[in-house]
Length: 164
Image (cartoon, rainbow, N blue to C red; front, side, top):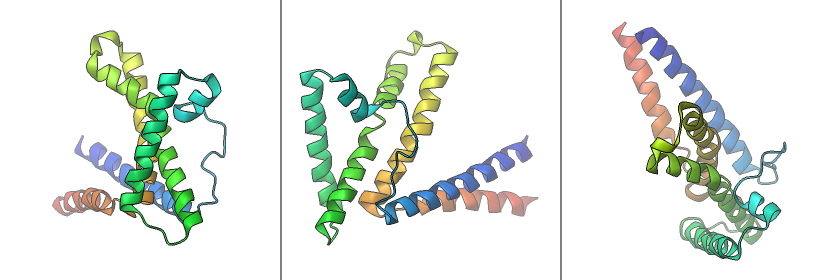
């Protein structure tokens, strides 16, 4: 069992390093499009497609304006065009997964409404979709690659190897 956990943790660390490397490339090259393939409509894109209610649109505008101010507090790029592009990308990465967050919040607030399949879908959907966006947003706003977490996982692997 311990070996299976070690192998799983090693795979997770390798995957995380690959994701970090890919995200660094995207952030360094802002012309790289995040939407290479068609994804299901979610977040802001679904509101544009469906129209959304006026209350929803107003709240989305308020959220976008707040996220702009937050980005501007933490990030000051010298080139105005690069700053605008990075800020727009940050807002995209912070809002595209809102539907996943709502579904996960609904699961946490009312677990009795979910069976194992729908709960699994909510959790996996959040983990797959939201976390990649959050990591990209962190890179854009904080210039932080989250190396601490990867290093922590690597130190766990190293200590497990040393005990064998």
